Amino acid sequence: MASTCCCEEKTQKPNIFLPREATIVRVDKPTDMERHFTLRMADGQPMEFQPGQIVEASLFGFGEIPLGFASSPTRKNTFDLVIRTVGRVSGAINKLEKGQSIFIRGPLGRGFDLDKLRNRDLLIIAGGIGLCPTRSLIQYVMDKRSEFKRFILFYGTKDPKQQLFLEDLSQWRGSKEVEYHETVDKADPSWKGNVGVITTLFKKTKIDPETRVVVCGPPIMFRFVIAELDKLGVRRENVFVDLERRMKCGVGKCGHCQINDKYCCIDGPVFSFAELQGLEEAI
Image 1 (cartoon, rainbow, N blue to C red):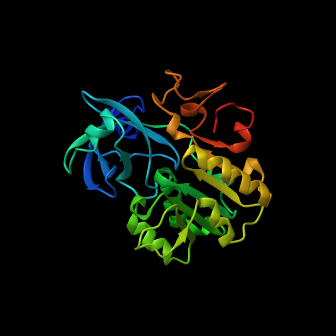
Image 2: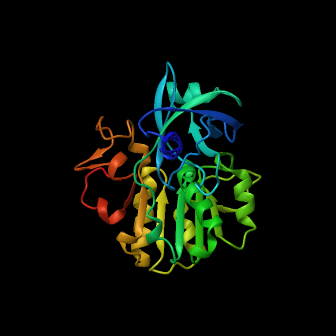
Image 3: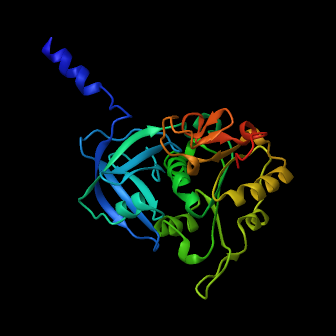
């Protein structure tokens, strides 16, 4: 009897609505505004999630903020979060160092439907900090490369100093597993690549209309990217957008992320663009 109870306790999953302590095992400072944290759960139970899902990260005395995973669930035992300093909570967390802790609630929301992406050509379009949640999917595809067909990645930033994950970018530039294209809105003397908004990258390659497309970035980017995809004949049910920027409580209670009858934190944050058509202020 005693051994049965012990077994049940070991297989019981953590309550996603209760904060769990996570220890910071690495901190990088990719830009003046962002901090890249690698974390490990203090209770020893790995965080299990899907690419595109989010967590609520909190610090006692300051509050909590929603964040998308910036690493793949295929990379076990640790997970990555990237936090931009924009307010009281993010500012306090970004002052923490290796060995200190934050608290994590989740995973929450609906991530990418991988069954709809497998065995298809895949194009990921990431603008600015939108590379963070899509990096979870990018790593997943790279780790399970045989499950996907042609893999193309567009990444755009305002200027070269805003680029994130520099080690990843260096790897993707030389990789045969992904067709990587990058651009900056404004170059500096060090930049030798494409200059222009992210839609200028469509001229660099040919996209099959049956390609599955994932888009994440600033709101203004969505409108112009969708227009380019329409020209190519990509159906809107095959275009998936990540709206995690709208989320707050993560459990459908505060209404902050509500778009008509949909809650980003429950119904999303990943939606097909066809689901959002007709919903005012969705994009």
